[in-house]
Each structure stands twice: as C-alpha cells, then as structure tokens.
Length: 280
Image (cartoon, rainbow, N blue to C red; front, side, top):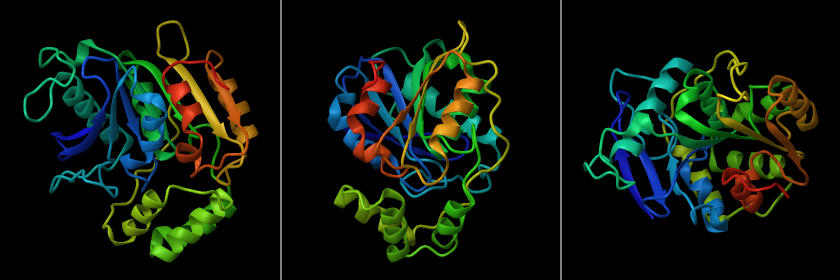
C-alpha cells in the first residue's frame, strides 16, 4: 500500500492506494468522520486482488486531506467538482507525475471507475453519479443516508452531542450504541476517538440527488446495500424506496449489521459487491 496527495482546487486530497497498478480503478469514499482507514478490512477481504483501490480522505473531515485557504467546499456542486479533480488525479497521474495505472497522464476523463461510498460518502458518490454518469462504470452505495429516506429523529438526537462537542468518550459511547456493542477493529476505534481533537468543517447538506437518470442501459450499474440493524433509518423502508427510485439497480439488505459497523464487520460481502460478484 502507498499514499499520494492529489492536487484539487479545494486543496490536496490524501488517497491511500493498494492493488495492482494496472488493474481497473475502484474509488472509495468513507462516511463522515470515518477516514479512508475504514476500508482496511475490505482490502484485506480481497478487494484489491483484481482492482487498484483508491481510498479517499474526505475534504474537511478527519484525515490528511487539507482544505485550501479561501476555497471551502460549501455545496453538493463543490463536492462534485472536488471529486472530479480527485478522479482526474487518480486516473491521469499522481502528484509526482507518475501515472498510477501505467497509462499516459491526462487520460483520466476517457476512463471509467467503480465508485463506492458509505453513508455520507454514498451521498457524495450519488450526487457525483447523478451529474457525471459517464465517468462511472458502476456505483455502489453502502447504507446511504439522505438519499432515499431521511434520518430517524432518535439517531439525530444521539449524534448531536458527538457532532457539537466531540470527546473520545462520547465517540466511543455513540459507536457502541449504534453498533450494538459489535467488536470493531481496536486500532480503527482508537483512531475514531482521536478525531475528537480534529478541527472539522460542517458537512455539506442539501437536497437528495436526482437519480432518475441512473439505472438505465446508458448509465452506470448501481448496487445499493443497506444494514438491517442500522439505527439511522429503517433499512427495509429505505430499500423499498431505493427499488422504486432505481428499478434497474441491485438492492439488498444485509442482516445483523449496523450502519457504522458495516465496512468493518461485513467486509467480505462489501468486497463482493464492489467487485461485481453475486451477493451472499
């Protein structure tokens, strides 16, 4: 595995990479506050065997992406432009000028990627897919929030103290509550607690993405996977809404998995989804 800082108009974006340099590109966006490290279990589950995996730190979130002074990300449109620049850097060449996939620099817009996102990262990925469908071969949304249904009020009330005044104890308690006490990776959990000291910006909010142009023969193939034990929304209701909005998509609900635990505790199924294999 190696890391690169991809230049964008909104600041350098940290991308952690693994897998064969010439393999098809797979780009992953974490949930809010989770950092790109949340994809480590998926990589270990075989995700990088047939793909070049690019795990991205979100701009303004904990991690090693650095917002440019005077150029904040304020809207869904800004996030789409930011992700466009990230994809250009990933596909066209790294900041050191070395094409990571062995192709000529500047060829980024002629190639398509598999784009996956979890939670808030799925919201960003969906907005990008809605506006730039030609850049993607597949879109994978993992327990997406604020796309097909809203958040449960009880979840929001639980999350507010963590968002307003995070402490390691509050972060640990919230994750234990949401995941039902699931055994999370201790190193990742310690990193989550450390994010209490990280100065973040307010996550971008806005309307739900218009996905009416996706799911057809000309758009990217779409996979949506919900966590049945998620406390942030009703997974079955969200799945029904996803099937109605995207009739051509493959939509599933994974039993026994929570929203925040999904990338860590269901790594094998996620790797299967992201690489196009049949679900469990």
